[in-house]
Length: 222
Ligand code: ZN
Image 1 (cartoon, helix red, strand yellow):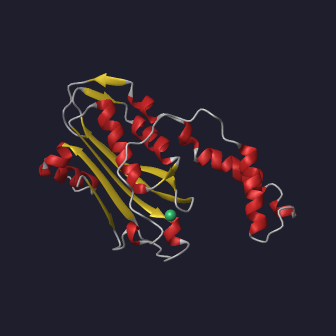
Image 2: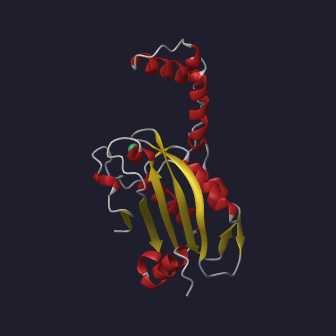
């Protein structure tokens, strides 16, 4: 296994009946070219409100379909971004120690409920001559997060992207997030967080490297 998926508060995301574990995948990173069909989303939101028994023509709801359509275009904007472009401007540097960017905040949308999950990602790699600007990690994360997602797949996608584009000796991605589909509905476990990780290369094969990463993430500088 090159990944693990555990919950900090004892529950496993996959134990929710609505959540099947993500299949391993090679994501299609080709960005969509057709624009979002905003009028179609508006019609769908009107229909949704009617199906709920609401009156989509009452004053408070009049602008809702248009507002929701713009919101979806924004939160799913990653579908039209190729995250690889952020990793193509690299610098040649003789730096072979771990590069770690910690606590990068993100919001993504669970594809099972279209509800947000929010948290932090820690992204590390062991350069092999190529390094990339630090801000690019946050860009990659955002492009991958802003699409219908599951946390497990998002974690793996970021790791695979870095491996493919930077050709480093190893990549580690650790993501911790709180899922509103678990906190506002269903089992309603507030305060639970789900932790996923994806290890590649040396992080997978060398326990010392992995331990160093975990210590750096948890702030215990040796
Ligand atoms: Zn969900």
